[in-house]
Image (cartoon, rainbow, N blue to C red; front, side, top):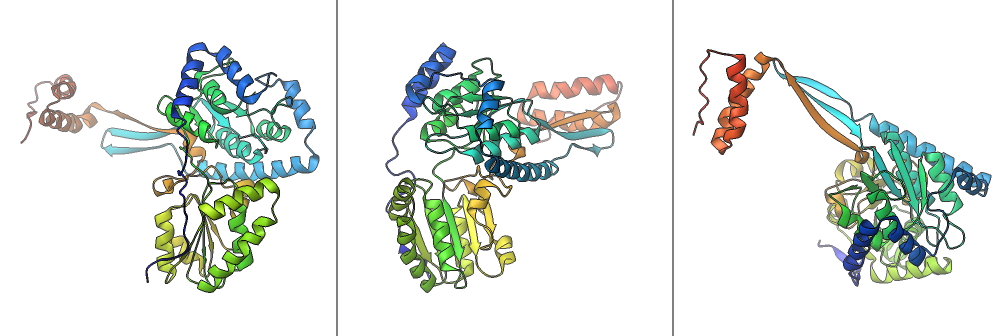
Length: 435
């Protein structure tokens, strides 16, 4: 049967999005031209903050002292999990070499970028997990300098829990600056910072646009849109857990899509009945976000069987994908497009968002069709090298000369010719293009 939409979204993640490109471009150009002075002006305007931009050791120590011991232990627990997972990821990239042909050796080398800029959203909430996810992976990758950047609160500064997380995870500098001005400061190397080679971490639409504009002159993790989540559930799934997980992700923002894909009409209808009640029980701001997200962006899709469910999921390529269905190994083997996968009701997206070890900086808006999330690999350049003996270069030089002439690249051909002439004087080579 064709997919049946028991609930269809009336809006998409880009509906009604304002065009912030011109605003962000203007701010970036101004800061690049006028430097620290301009960045400080925007900080005063948008952050409403006039304290130190780069936190001193004393300020970091004072902020850390404000964090309750129990929360410190939780942050340390999450940091340890993320660090150990990142260390395991790093082991999958090795320096290697091989003899391509006798006498010609080529290799691969993994080199971390020098400077990373890690953005952790502030605002109403302390996005502690973002500091953990971005700084820890940069540290494990081997970046020489890591700047953690987070919006300060007026009269307060960066949230103490973010300061503590960035500090224990290995940030070399912690910057109290948010938005476009924070991204610009890291990119342009303001306030004595090294210019960032890569910018990572989530942010609002202005931060996302700044990263998009700057991409090319600086690396980025990805261009992120509103967070999205999809749950695959069969008739054996616990409807209350499914509904709770949907609501937990809808609270991210008013335009955060959540989707339920199932082959059970009974489950779908039960979940649809539960969600509004669970949303009503949330605190006010969370309730407002979840209400709008569920009303305007959520979908509930009924499929004929698990194969159709899997195909539907791959079409959506969700940032977060949860499976609450039988035969989890089948789903793990079958599914191909997602940012991070959560198998079984014993785990949940919230675990990945906060503390389980996998990274929560993930591809949104169907970008999981072509990329994964943040990892140590994002901070590393995989470069190649080669060396050869004179005899080892002989056959390569001949092929290079002929291919180059076929392509009309005479200069390339002559770079091979001179080596053959020097290394093998007196030998005759047919170096004309073979058409």
